[in-house]
Length: 560
Ligand code: AMP
Picture: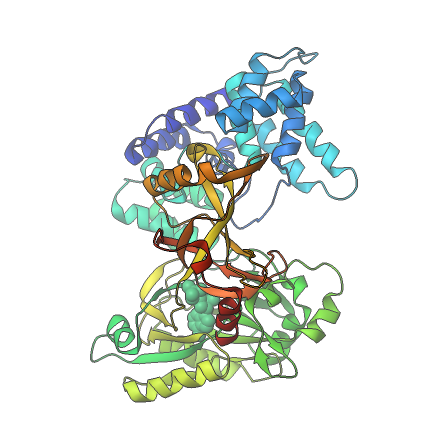
């Protein structure tokens, strides 16, 4: 199949805002695809060669891509950079460079989908010395054979921003339309199969060859990570009881641990650990596999759990990001498991001894879990309470906070396990962090659709002693386009310097920011970083020196 044909679909997708039209376009693409192409198209249509569960990364930055464009076209990098700045999209700059190219491939060939797919897969496999050069070569080879439109989408694919507005839900609906009847029940069957496989290649082939029944028969397979069940937020204990259960239903409470959500897959001696985002982290936490082998008596199981790092001396949990440092460590892994030991707090069992428990009530899943999990160093089940009595729950909540945990989870004891869904029958209750008033110190022009806006704002608190605004984080969500336009207009006159897409600013604009947590962080001048900051509103009524101070940030950090 010619790549140009796929590019036609990309163009059509980008040309409409209607989800229905997008779905129809994709359904046609899938329905017409032959055996070989279907599995390639279901990932390429979202701009990647990989299914979600393979967290493969191409490792290609904008700068490398610019170099590759220059190499393929003979156009100088500076000119490409200028175009890029003008349009805010390196794909557009690539299309332009290809149309203006001063050099041609010796033997130009027509790009096909297989070649593009294979090259992307190859790039992801490059490692070690010289891999950067090989990546540039591979991309430039593709670009040498590309027509301008193809170059636009190749570059966007390489950079991971295809910009055709196709989400996972559109692929789901398109598969239901292409191979089933496109009804609600069909979409649900596709979705469930996806949540259990995280792989549209499998889902597409199953839908095509075995229909709805085949999709419904898709189940958990060990070592293929599933999407985990997610919780909603509740305002308080009384609300949580009402949220998760009817008056005659049981509420199960558990400590809410703050660490890394993991799914542990075990078969015999083989144990592998994946995060909620499907990344495999088995090697980063070697102590975990041995704890699971020792403590879990089942031959095969999938445990849903939170992995928490502990401070050995104080016996208290360490901040999340201290633990998350362990995830990417390749060296001293063993040593770190000594300095930041972990405990796996297990709270669910979606699969055991070869059978799925997804449709069993939570109480049943836990009663299967308990006899096969013996408490050992580094592993235990989550602290629990079964009660609807608010005062008892409050004690439990206080105890969780006193032990350094984040809060509690309330769960309907009779509910099934719904992979990948934020469900109302599991809610979290934790103390709210009060918002902070912070000053915008630097900003960065956005890319893509919002490239006219300063979309990424660096935030500082006030340090009265130094009369300075040390940064505590970076904001890129929470505002509407309109608010963003207003903020940009207010910030532009404050620009004091420009470096690439970044600008430094006179610290004048004060914003109210909410966030989930304060972490300590070497990344920012303050030594702290806000986790998940969101824009609440402008505080035009405040002068920069009225912003929250560094010592306030320190206090909040200590209190959480
Ligand atoms: P949040 O990250 O604030 O949306 O809260 C939900 C997360 O809390 C889950 O994804 C888990 O990582 C974590 N968590 C901690 N303890 C539990 C528990 N006992 N049951 C379920 N989730 C938990």
